[in-house]
Amino acid sequence: MKSFTPHLQRQPRLQGLVSTVLVDSPHGDHSLAVHTVTALAKHAQFLAASPVVLAFDGATVVPTRPSVGIDEFGMHFGSACAKSDANETHYASYKQHIMEHARRVLAMPVLVEASERRCIAGVIRLALETTHTEYVLVMQYDQPFVRDIDTEALLRLMSRNVDAVKAVWLDTGVNQCTAANAWTACGRNRPWFNPRSPPISLGTMRGTNASTHEETLYPVQQWTDGVHVSRRDFYIEHVFPTVLRGMEAERSVGRKPDETLRRQPSFVHGAGGKQLRHPIPWMGGFVEWYAVCEPWHNHSFWGTWMLGGPFSGYWTEHRASKTHSNPTCYNPAQCACEGKILRQRNDTRTLRASVHS
Image (tube, rainbow, N blue to C red; front, side, top):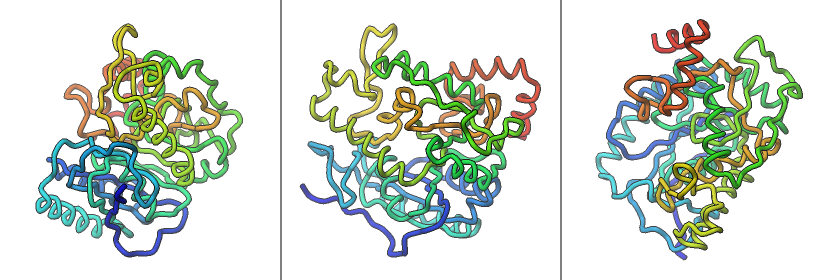
C-alpha cells in the first residue's frame, strides 16, 4: 500500500508540561478560528504562553481505502468527513491569516499541515508527532473558551492523580447534565457496553477541594471530541488503538448491521431499540465515535472527568453547533436538564450571565 505522507514543518519536537492542539479544516466561517485563538489568549494565559499547535487538515479528499491504511505513523483514519476537495488557494490564504493572528497573540504558535484530508482523529495524531509534552489540550476551531481557566491548577491535580485521571473535559454546559448524556449514548443506545462500571470515587483523589470549582472534578463516563486535557501517552497507547480496532472491525464485516458489527460503538440502536442506524460515514475519522463508551464500561481504566463540581461548567462553547434558543447547549435533553438546574440554582444562573456578558 502506498504510504501516506503529510507535510510537517521542519522544527524540533516540542517538550515540556503541556501544549495545545487546535484542529482546523476547510470550512465557510473564517471568523471562528480567529475567535477561538483570541479566547485562548484571553482566558487560558498559561496555555497561551506554552506551545500551541495549529493543526490544519488537508484540502484533498482521497478515495476511501480498502482497509485501514498505514502511514508513517502506523495508521490512517479516513477522509470521509468531507465529500469533495476544498479550494487550495483559498485554504492557503485562510491558514496564513490564522497563523498571522496566532503569532500576534500567542507565544509559541506552531504550524502543522496534512497533505490530504485526515479528519479530526488523523489531524490530532499528526499533531502529536510534533508535540511531546506530558499533557495536551485538544480543541477544535469552533470551541472557544468563554471564561478563565487555571490550567496550572488543573495540571497539578492531574499530576497528583495520574492513575485515576487520564483526561479532563472543559464542558460547554452544566457538568451534571453532560454526564447524564452517557446513559443515553451508552446505557441505552449501545447496550453491549453494559453493565456500567462504577465511576472512580472522588474521595480517592488527591488534592481536590469540592468548595472551589477549579479544584474538584466530576466523573463523566464517555469520551467526546469536546475540549479536553489528556496525557499524550494515553492518546498514543490507548485512544488511537481503540479507534483503529473499531474501524478494522467495521471493515472486516462491511456495512451490514450483523451481530459482529452491531457490537461496535459506531452502530447505535434506533428509536425503541428496534433498528440500527449509522449517522456518520465509514472512515469518517471521529475519535469519539469509537471511544465514546469505553469509560462507561471501564471508568477505572479510562479515568474521564469534567473540571468542576456537578453544577459547574460553561468553560467553552461549540459555536458551530449551538441552537438559536440556547447559546451553551446543542442537545435537547441537555438543554432541558440545564434549564431545570437554572430554575433551581441562582448561582448557576449568575454563572451563565457572567459567561455571556
